[in-house]
Image 1 (cartoon, rainbow, N blue to C red):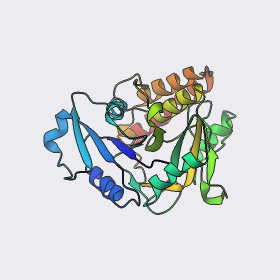
Image 2 (image 1 turned 135 degrees about the vertical axis):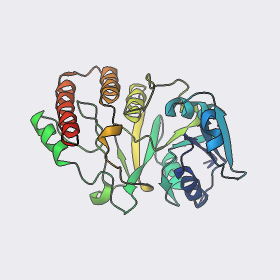
Image 3 (image 1 turned 90 degrees about the horizontal axis):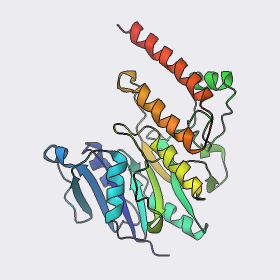
Image 4 (image 1 turned 90 degrees about the vertical axis):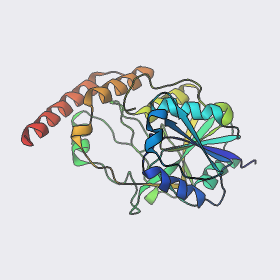
Length: 274
């Protein structure tokens, strides 16, 4: 198998990008190139990581999905890995993703297992509120699935003796595609933060009869998210998940109930902090 691969990173020029590139350099199999796509408006604010391996491309538009797809169009390798600019990759992450082509044939995409930097699986715990609301709406929490309200449940490999597991979706922070399978059109139809774009992409790939796998031994690390309701756009989130459910012709009833509850919770939170 040809291990030539390109990494595409869509970024706004975040400081975390340097740490991400540093971790790429520690990989046991280095990529052919790393293409970093950044809006021109941030070019003067961003300090480039000087390297022959990294190619910076400055574009006239802003949007993670659109930037990423533009980066895809510049890739020349057989395999392409999309990577977010705030992820630290394990030394063998890319190697283990590429190894999937020895095990699977046909149309498929594969992504890694995600862990927080303290070594805890990102999907080890589900909040009590989410469990309560799922119970009230008769939603079954099953790893690797997308719920009837457009939320993806991740896979915690801690107690699983499997190298790969099939899933309904992949987190967009890191995934591997063959060059011939790269998307050429922007699949996220809205401006602003791309809420659940990875679920939308996964749904569209499943509709094209792609299988989706998660590799246990391909590992990425991320920071624990900081919960900040003041930076959360409920309406944009709702609109994106409504679009996701429309792809699979799913009912919006439970989604509408869920977001009515969330709207009330956010209202109370805002009122308490006045």
